Length: 395
Image (tube, rainbow, N blue to C red; front, side, top):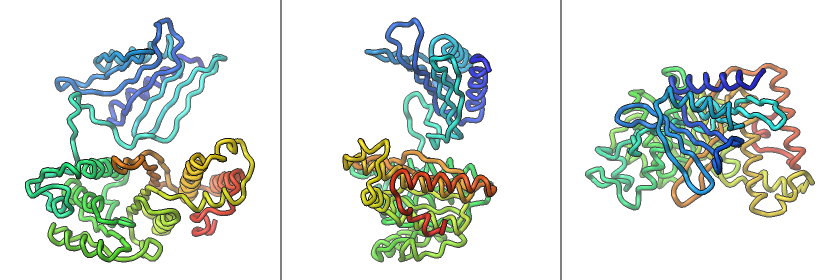
């Protein structure tokens, strides 16, 4: 297929994403044109004087130049740039990413991958942030020391409040993918002090107007007692916190299962519970990937990345990616559409990976066998005897 036809497909997908409000941004790279020092163009949606526009950030070697265009004009410019200079175009949407690349030999690659953004960014030109969770008249935020009695966010709680809203923003986009009425019971595994559990309950009941039961599962009894007291004071009748471990909790009727920062194999326990419950949505932010790192260190298999993994920090990162990559494959095996993207924990720690599984259709025998082979090959390549989630599910 000629490159112009691929560019036309790219343009059609761009228009569809703008119409469907799933557009995130466009990146144009690998510039081979005549304009000196131009390296890349980044394109995002903005609203200026109540009119939708696309903002082009032209990145030169030593400076950036920003220009705003009407949507139709901008789409025409993107098409021209792909025809006359830029060899790579990437369209980011909340549904998928599309990559158009013209190789040096003239061959064209047009592929799609899972969405790297869970939600479209705000288009407000003045950067005004629209928050799904407001600070005013929220007694639970006051009780949890996020705001004062008037709803003003404490200075030392600004990061936490932003984190709460970022979390709800991500979950809201995921929940919208599900059929209406799907989310009847939520379990937040390892809920801690309940910041995010309260915010999710508030969003489900106050914004979406659902009658969803929300359970926070927490091992520390003092945290359970505190959160239940706050729930009563907030008149959150369908919010309850229970003492226990992820491993022991009975999640058989849960539709949405969440586990943020469950340490090491506790994340596997949570995914296992979600799969066994046939939950429509599973959302985990893993941490402390010790089990797979021990496996890699124990077997010391020589492979193409051994020159990297001889360094402890790279080995740690490799173990994180392998652990979560296999988790994503296992979710796919059980019929989940998987997404992996970044979740901002807070201002004082790095960004976390969020692994998401949205329940889809059960795969056929051939597809399942292919996924199992990928898991087996990955384990052999990195010298992994077993993955804890794999063992729980008896794969």
